[in-house]
Image (cartoon, rainbow, N blue to C red):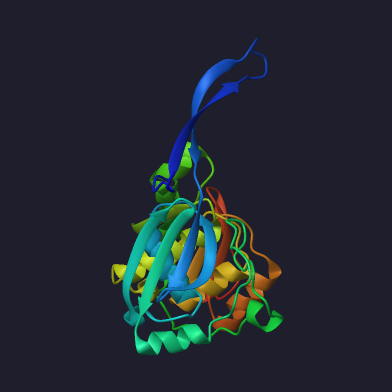
Length: 270
């Protein structure tokens, strides 16, 4: 049976509730995940465990956030469904192939819960980040509007209860793009790839993520050019240090009752 390109599968189950006698037969929508093998010009690079939707965005976003090649160096992406998973071949220009040759190597699959699975050298795990541009000044109201809008735009998340989301918001808090995945890193890579394929300028808005903000999420967003990132959950201390390193405004613990700004608060207007 070939791997499915459907992100949700419905399965039967038995459900009981506290205070209710007996159980009930139900049909439950479940988030799916599949092995997604990324190849560059036919050469295997990594296998990601990801929700099988927006796979081309995932491939492009991973290529950009891993600093393998630039958007202009990606000439084609082909997706093939095999018995064991999805095979995605990213074709690069000659210049892009030089970058791929210098990319950090991996020795195992990238699980949906892990952003750096299989990285083989310590020096490749936490890499220096280049300074970001000034970006736009964003109001608190815009951030709150983006958070509220994302809750209603998480189609797969509401259906399954098991998806992370990443969104591109403009300075008014309007969401231009939303991507979802069981893996928080995959969701952000899908957003980065989708934004690049649509020609969006990351510096013209900000990223919103529903997950905790670990340092590799900051790295991916910084490499993509986001001067501001908003996370629903808490950041790690290393994430804050990396945001300070590249000059990113990091807003986290973004909830209905307020947010916490950890770095570069001058980009947030009252």
